[in-house]
Length: 525
View 1: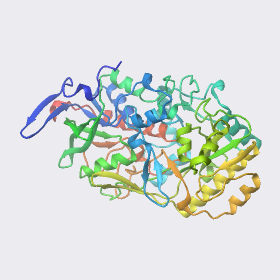
View 2: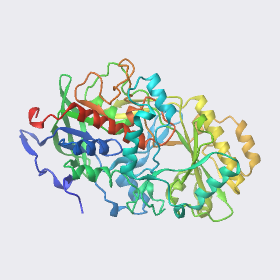
View 3: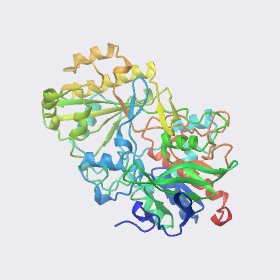
View 4: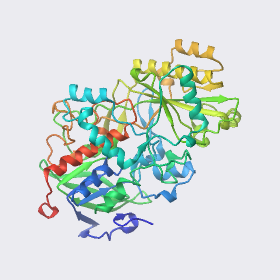
């Protein structure tokens, strides 16, 4: 049953409180008024909306994707990718090599399809932002209460031990065997059942995504959520924001009803790719000239290890542990089982060879590695759509190879018989001796298969308007009433999963708006 005040395409154009303005020879425009319009409903937008609604403001959340409740989630990965992911989860940041990235497009955003890791921003990163980017109020001590608030709402805790599968136990035991630092993951979950369906919508509601936490909270306090609505641009008078314009997303290629929402403040939480895209389409000019720059990706590689024994990696939670032994080098390891259809699609084999390998799916351990990158890319608008470009540095390429070799060493130490690498043209590894050759091998960057779900940094915050797009509290420089609350704000990559950092920064943005006071919608509609 759909919650009250959450409206989908079936509710248009008869949304309570809206008016319909007729235009000659053009589609009618649906208009609404509110205090604050929030674009996006994920880790940034849903948090801002719920905090502002609880603070007494009239809030409208606009989400491009549809509303899909917990009871609609199944193990059908193909169906989930079509419904919950933008463009089928296979968009690329162009470069050498290209980096495939995925993001959610649904009510709840990427929190619906992520692994649920809930980590505070490392203290050294917060210190760097305060020291090098002049971000105010960002030290670990100053952020502690904000992190606590977020962790309470999303139920951040360790897994129940009986939900940890064999693939994660192998990762854990392999790290301990080598005396590596390995820690249990903190996840936004309440008695997770270990179905390993995190990336395709949690079917039990145990994963505390914003779909089941902050969105219901915002609705409870009177916010309005509009699903299937794409924001085309922010509207303004001079440098003062007046709202947003967009259109209803239909099931066909034709745009549905256009809409216009009048608001004194607009919060963009569309992610590090689409937030700058909206700003570009709106004609917003940053005095720093850095809008869309500073794109970090946390490039990921994965290896597929085949064991003699049955692993059944689909049983148990997604990522119960992280190996942090090499975090000072920017490397983090985890076990990440993926469904057979997707695993087969990403393996470098075809025909009978792929068929024979996939027969070993029950004996596979799929492990991944996150890299805290040192290079940055950029987002530009091409024909009205944001396009990301990113060039992996030689230094980061070497670190990816080293990290892959370390991970393979550990897996062979736990009994792996064969490891398929993410490097085109490099033969599968059959023993630890093969790993020694991998350390010394020069692998061209264009041969690497890279993926990510951590896009960051394109509207960086900081105290220098000549270097940053937003100030320390998310306000876009030189534009009144326009704020950003998503991973775009990161001045640099953080080396861990970014969800809690986004939520904490969004909480700060909401507090900034509330501190400025409430301005009734009728004063500026």
